Image (tube, rainbow, N blue to C red):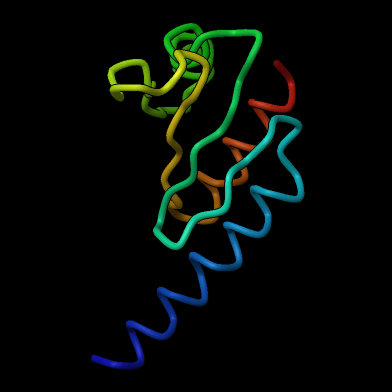
Length: 92
């Protein structure tokens, strides 16, 4: 279903741009449907807990070998999920 693939790629690219431009923390470029966010001075684990308490689920990168413990991984989801992520992370 090439139309579905094109729409999905458009959606992901749109939100990757929003993440980079609207998140108050540094967001690394990505060619996938997720990004890594540098949440220093907090740790990834701390940010996971804070965001979860606000209804946002992200992954800590603390188990990623060779990577410092102040990163999280955020997937591109539905519009409302992405908007909630940006709203909540920018409040922290």
